Image 1 (tube, rainbow, N blue to C red):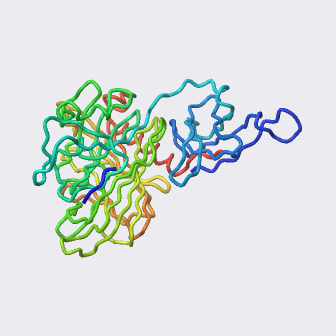
Image 2: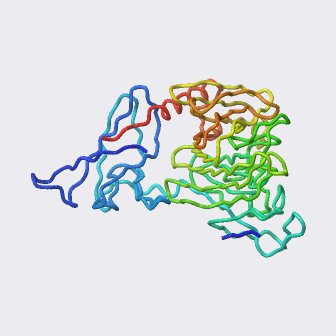
Image 3: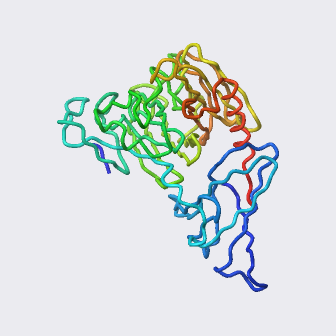
Length: 401
């Protein structure tokens, strides 16, 4: 049976008179980046008193979102150099002087329609798809069932796109992009797997093979890394899909070590991507701690390997000719992890594995970088510098007072 279906902020009123603040007054925000913080534009959450609901940042791209908890927050894009402060001003929407950024974040899942299942394959005349906000995987769904467009959920920012195989492989793949526009609604519409060829918008660049790809979950056993061969139920739910942020959940019930249900656990994962950044933020909740949970990074031969820490965060990354889109085409791939949540980082048969300490809540991040798009990064040394800057950003987030 299946179904389809922060950053802390303190606000200071800029008073028009000596009287109490009214809704006609703007608010001043002082944003500070530590001297040991990172550089670059990022999207932050700003909690605003209810009477200012709907107001926007005057000189920065911003938008309001409603979280799945019902909380309303303002998202704003900021770029503050390390060791400096900047003033942001919250004003009525009509006074914002920023042109709209357009849609820079997107998540989706589409199912094939107009046919029927024949064993483990979905058969239909042609390929027509319908986007869904929620989905429970049918029991027969497997790799190459030709049922899900590009085989699972896809998500993207203006910088990079990704997809998750929503079957037993449960690996994460990379969609490189030639521009800022949302492109995933185009992928797989003209011949199902046409995205394996570089097109005007970009393409599927990574050979995942037997690995976890870029930052999917697995369980490390005596027989190697177990993917999701034994799971009772897999569910997808779209959480948010706005101009600056896209989020979705994937929940696995009864993820076991064998067909008899040994060591079964329930796992909930949330994937979030924000505009102006290729980073995917992943949060994991488990029904009980386990000492075999891993994430990984595909270990292609001949790649430069980067393994470093900075503050609270570490990274394992690779750089080299690991794109399948063209001869000599390079990719940079990375998995970021909290140092206090990890027991080991080591090379395995198909992956560079990050082993998590037993816990019920885990956070990590992933990213991919395509030097044909990010032309200022041309070497492993450049990529390492880029990653170290990310580690600084994660370890020392900007503060707003």
